[in-house]
Image (cartoon, each protein chain N blue to C red):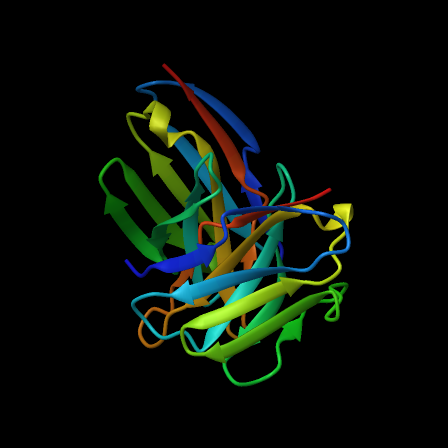
Length: 116
Length: 109
């Protein structure tokens, strides 16, 4: 199956710093990528939809100035958590949607963010 | 919006046992995927199954779209099957994958 690479897998940072997470589709082009957030023992919640070459679409309640998304190419989307605070600590997962045919979504391995 | 409910929320099995996980959804969907989230958080695609029945080894899935449910069967469970199983539905009009709350499975040796 298709591979989605997400880095870093884990990051620990001080409050107030910014953290960038990368999501790459390795063997297919993804015009659309998605960013999810997952709290412990909960399901995945969609944060935003990222389209190549255009502005991201954010879900209700997600601060676009806090979570900056850039989708500069058909294989790369980045999520930057700006001025991170302890409440931003969570598991962030990206996903890329295949094109044509089945349009299956493939997921990265996730990034565990801990803000001290 | 569409609601996706999974049952049971938690399941404990002895190794070798069989189980059935259920996913109900409240409206018509364009496709449905089953995932296994392993203890490290990685989501693994199990099935893309908008309708019909598919099998892959000890796992099989059936979706009855007209009745708005899907079932995931696990036979001869192994400890490596432990983790959380999610179903997620896609609706073209909303252009998003909506996840159920998951079934947390623990298989004991």
